[in-house]
Image (cartoon, rainbow over all chains, first blue to last red; front, side, top):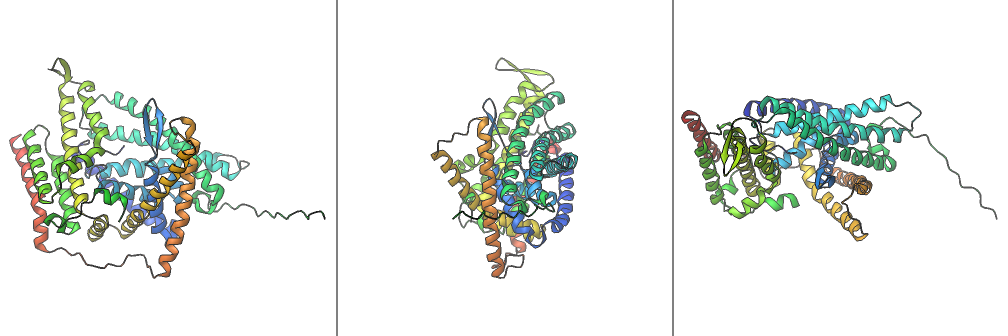
Length: 231
Length: 253
């Protein structure tokens, strides 16, 4: 999913670079509010985590496999602004190690960091707001995490096709690109959704204070007193 | 510093290694931009770019074998490029008895040539510059400090997390886990959750330890890496040559 050099023409690469820079600038400002003085270490840790998680390949269909994009996951765990920064840094380091083109960095950030986080977190928020209050908070978060991550992958793929229509260097019928990209990425999206939901669920079960999206939710204090043993 | 970097970095003391990282970063980016802007019909120009990179590689004592092996990351896109002549639209030409799309052939060539040159340039950069130095270079190029810090922590933690992940994978394998099925999703995702928790709690401890040693949001700079004019001039040779080749291609083509 990392676009190399030469895939898009120069105007689109530069345009996407400008969009990416603006998105990162907005996120830099927003992230300070999200994560206080621990911003850098914890965002760096999440970036390292997404980087490692991208190395887990999961089976998609008939021999192909996909890996996590991590936009929705990072946004739910550390917040949308810090999420954008995490994914951008992951892409930056991958670019410095030659995975993804230097001139395509803006495109990669736009696709995976901006669109992935915006759509993933947006859908996540919408679903949590739409579910009735009777649903327990953790079930809500898990379901919303699944749907958010599921939506984020085809959304990135759609943006890719849109950019392709603007400045792709190959003469392909757009319909063919659209069908191929959407088909594969819907399947990858299901994998992304399942992994994101279960990961968020696991973290929410053990350390709910670490899930950004669960901030403000308080579990009512439960006092369990041991039953006096019969002597 | 990290396993990631170590795999790519080739220690050495050639003139390319000794250049300050910020010069090399700018040179690489400018070179790649020149390559991307070159019209695809100017086949000779791409030969020229390849020769320029080969000269840098020779100067940096990076062997061709190492370069080719590290370029394997672009394989999925090579597969895509190879498919292009068969699926692209437009007039067809006969090649070895196959009717191939003419524009598809050009697109495939375009992607293959530019992606390979871009990847080779990045591999050369990573091979001659330590990851830590790359980050210092980015800092000197005025990348926002918060991003540099996140990247620094990411590089620091990546090894720890990847090591933890490897131990967990080994533990799963020892219990007969074989992740080739959709049913494996649950196990993999729970592993990811546990991985996040373990690394996060470790990160918290490391952060507290750093605070108690006086960390104030910035790593202390032990050696300044300011670049002299002469060093910038040396670093400019590659991109300037590339821009000359690219403008030649525009004028001729």
